[in-house]
Length: 563
Image (cartoon, rainbow, N blue to C red; front, top):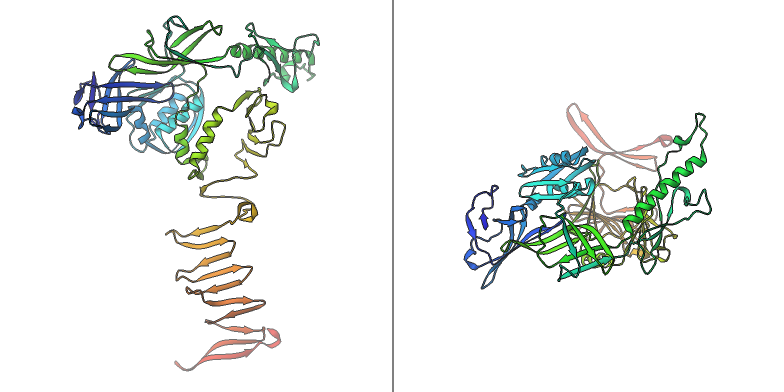
């Protein structure tokens, strides 16, 4: 049963304002991704299916509320897109709130209570990791996404209840066998990170044969394929030297090296066991029994690839009328790109935490080009984990790459001359953005500090700097024609290498100017005195006879000795 509720309703236990008989009602849900309802009904409900009203529909997790975002009526039906009531969190603004060293549950409670309007949501989490977050001018929805990114976990949306949980789903013994109980299935396999033979590299270039030259430098998987998957990976090692020193501080180098080798071997074994089979995603066009929700465990058997893995449901489509799944996606490598392009088309606010300064970069007319570049790059980028750093390259092997991004605990650096080339730009961990060239379409900032601001030249053509007052009137500009400062009456002062220094009235007539070492002025008003060559002064003189002024004029006074 699908029920209609009003725009301000928050309790959905009743039958609502009306029971709707739909033509189509399908819920789409992704892990930490979208959650919406595609809805169709007859024209009988033309006055009911309007933006803002709420539809409550049956789902595998019970009745859930979806707010109508938009509705379109044709001659025969009404179609509507409805988003889960969770997305109302976009309407609640957090002006400035600081979460400091809190676990996920406390962070959610802190942010949910910091909205400018009273939040209708309740929050809960069992993620125990601690973190910090300075939230400045973000919606509750944006804040929750940041919490997911920093604290980790899975987003659980149950009407006005928001949870972030370490683990979701159930293991009901579901087994999917390709070619047997599945007839309509799409399989996407990613072999990019598969490794069956690994040369691990440890601290200071340590190899597994450090103490025994006859030892094998490789770790090999029990699983092998027709072609080799051999790689080398650098691992970070945190073995403390002090644990292998005697009372006098002398290091037992052999024992310390053996500890490093044992650690390197164990890390390598874990890496191989994790990556010796390809990552697989399946999209199933069927109703799979015993699936209860996102996160449910599924055992996947595919004899064609020799695969027998345990994975999880990551998205589904549920028919609310038939009350069954019509599409289920499960796998272990798909990364959802929910909101990527939306974040590009909107203003990107880079809030500098612990500061009142902000930098806003707005993408304008080149949006489509930037959007295409990002989507195209998604299919031609390769990520390599090397223990102490992460490389993103444009081609494999990495030695033949041209464009390289390197990330480590020092920051992020960029090179277009390969992994051994020059990293000419970087964003370091201490908030320094080091770029040889930055091309920004529009830049808005409260404060910019720097050494040299270069405008113009043959590289970027004609530079221009404009200054406006609080009423948006242009009061000064600096360009290839020099510096021009405007008066309120339309007059202006011009300084450049042609006229030197000159003032003009609003009709562009010269009123004063410098010619060589001479200053010219059409009119002059002197309020007090004039001194010529430091020898003769023109000063005002007033002579009184009692209280009566008998002479009021100008006097000439010689300055004896130039004083």
